[in-house]
Image (cartoon, rainbow, N blue to C red):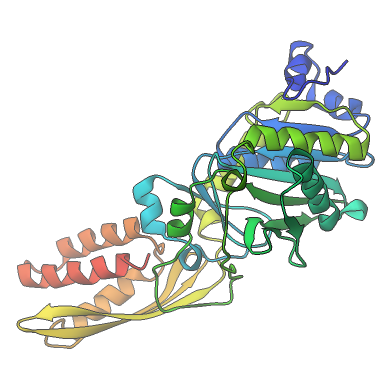
Length: 373
């Protein structure tokens, strides 16, 4: 019997009883409220995939709470070079993830709550889910002015975005997930979700910038724990299920067979970068030559995250045509990333004649190209 205390580890009770995962799924009689004990973005996204792929949601809706260590999550059809500051993310150790739903780019940290509403395809209703969240917020703080929008965002005081929405609709099941800004690092959010890269042309889905604000700034009692408990209570009342938040471990193969493979797939370069829609770079930069500056133009086509066409144009007296051609052809087929560019630069320096001046210009070119990766 489930004890109606928040965050009671109901799944652990099942583990202790050695109930197999298939048995657990079949014993779910109504709905579930789950919360991940992991703060790893790939593991938590894998839980979404697993539930969507394996659980029978007919008459058994699921609400899933999860929070991540600092991460940037892009939509399935987005271009990370357009959406975020990749170099700054690498320096700060912030993870990049691509989810399987559409929508725009979001920043996650422990001050941001992620909510995923799972239902059958027939009962999928984003607006109803958002209204449920609003009722929960008003239950703990009636003075809050929070309203859903036609874009399925939540606005605080009519202007500040506190929640964004994305979804995935399968053949028979669907999920709607949204964020809820409680006490996130807004400075880091704004700096990471600002692309410094110029000259990108792409048909990828673009995010729409918005003013954001934390709920904790409106009321210091609105902690993540308070908000999750309030939403869980409202969800349980609405669906007439036990108000019990079950803690789950996303790496537990006894409960989620095959889930670790899903998490590994979400971490691959081929998924995060390789699924980027085809795009082009058309940019230029100046190099110092004596007392003057010379312009170098760069044209790059990228498909599946790899360079399909590269054309570097520089004055012949600064970099001979045959050297430029060697550079252009060497980049084709390589990953559009700074690590691969560094490797290519080192290889090319070893294969060309010993010319320190030429190597210096070669490195200048490659360093500037890496700056757009």
